[in-house]
Structures are given as structure tokens and as C-alpha cells.
Length: 165
Ligand SMILES: [Zn+2]
Image (cartoon, rainbow, N blue to C red):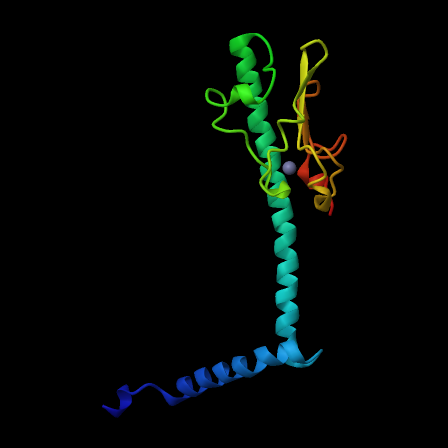
């Protein structure tokens, strides 16, 4: 019967960890550079890593929006023998809705940028504004130009791996 009671070393180590956390966490906010504060420093680094990842994820999502719009524009052209006059006419048959860029706070940054040029031969679409500068992009990128048929992150840069930020 006595053997079935929880082992004391386990209980004691659990309690010690609890007390340590109780003491260490408040000290992290007060002290500077003392040992328990390494916990706080580690969590700061994690925040920095996460936001960099978020910047990249938002850029990937934006480029993916541009690819979806590009596909819809081309499908419209197949059916109508010309590029659409605006993105609005795509909604319903070719696009469920006009996508939005998370880096721009969920705004439609594409409708204003869409332009047909070259006497109706080409079109261009980009994320209008300066919403990806933290990923190292210039304003009005990423963009797609049907003349070269590629999504560019910077002039001449079409591979995400060639971005450094
Ligand atoms: Zn964007």
C-alpha cells in the first residue's frame, strides 16, 4: 500500500520547478543580466524570428494572390479574346473575390495597379504601395508582367531564395 503513494523525489522536483518559475519570471522583468533573465532574452529572440517568418509568409501569400489574379485574367482573355478592363469584372466567374494583401493590413492593393498596355497585348499587376519593404522589396513589388511572364520580387529577381533580409 505504501509503495503506491507518489514518489517524493518527483513531487519535490515538480514543486521546485514551480517555485523557480514563480520567482524567476518576475525577476526577469526587474533585473538586468542576471541568470533567470536569459529566459526573457530567449523569448525576445523567438519573437524576432517569428516576425521574420511572418514577413516571408505575407510575401509568399501576396505573390500567390498575384498568381491567382494572373490566372483569372488569362482565363478571361481565353473566353473574351481580350484582357479584362478591370479586376472587378473577374469577380464571380473567374475570381471568388479580389484578394487582399495581409502585409497591407488586408487591403486590396491589386485593383489600382492592374493595367493593360501595349495596345492590349500585355498586362501588369503588382502589390501597389510599399508594404513589403521589410522583406527587402522596393515599392510596387511583387509584380507580374505578362511580357516576361514571371512574378518578380525585385527587378530581375524571381526566386525568393535570392532575397536577403
Ligand atoms: Zn502585398
